[in-house]
Length: 286
Image (cartoon, rainbow, N blue to C red; front, side, top):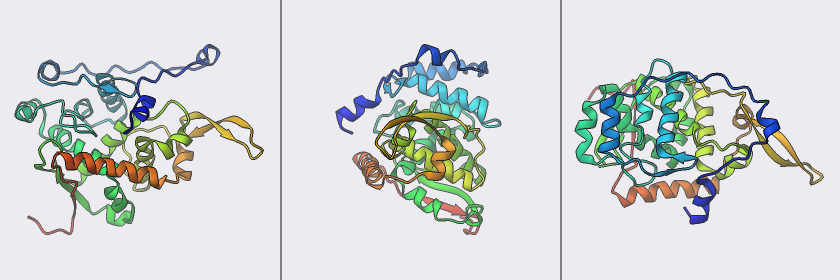
């Protein structure tokens, strides 16, 4: 990504008009469970999360994902999203060294580790787009027969998998919560055509709703302010909702093709295969 494009997304400080801000009513935030001390010690002493994020520190991003999952994805472990990037991010950065994977695994349940190990791989599949193209072409009846997903770990290209139907759909819900933190504060209509994370958020959300597999709570009535042009050339402010974006979403194919090529380039640099296999109920037992 060009340096000026990176600078345009990092450390943004939105301006809030005081008169507008006082009218916003915020509900008290629920308190998420305290982190397991052994896990946080491992993260702080044996891993390196000291990297920049679009709107703050990387730990801010992890904590948001953890807290949102705890409150809005009931019944599933929020620790998955606290650790979603520990074995790799969208670019070739790895907070945890491969040699420490056994220790990480010992600190998690089998289900948690399965999702943590798969997360960087599925994220790249979503950003690379062939995976979503295939899913979107399936009927809802076909989608119901999915029983898992095989792919390769980003950190070492070793095989990894989501081994059940529940794992598969649960994992895509973890992914939509993760993408939620990348939504810009405003100008969604512009961002959906220019920002690959925003475009993929809208696309995955629409898919999960169509398949009736959205289990995490995502408020479709939430709106942002956009500056739009009227037919006579005047600029006016208008509210744009997530629901409206989903209904009217038209992908910017050139922009998304470039983003897909970038993901492929990152994976090629480290010998990571983006090949995957969707497993179905009709497949023969291995």
